[in-house]
Image (cartoon, rainbow, N blue to C red):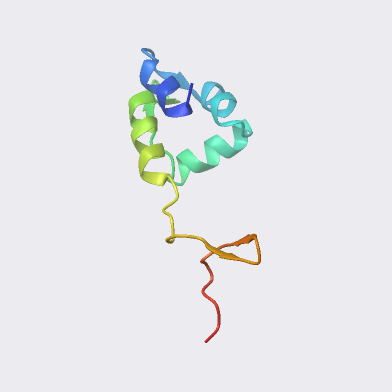
Length: 86
């Protein structure tokens, strides 16, 4: 099951330690991202909490964008970014 699907199934508010475990990062990293506004969060009685549906939306928006089709040369896959020099 994808991380987004896991978050969408969640019915309770998440704690920082829950988010750290799901994202496989340190607790300190979660706190820094939340404090910097880079991770959607809110405070409840002074504690940082996370809405799982907001995190799922955040992940959808944060997914990498493809730079176009990959070029194939000599049987090896070459990425189209950065572009080849003219």
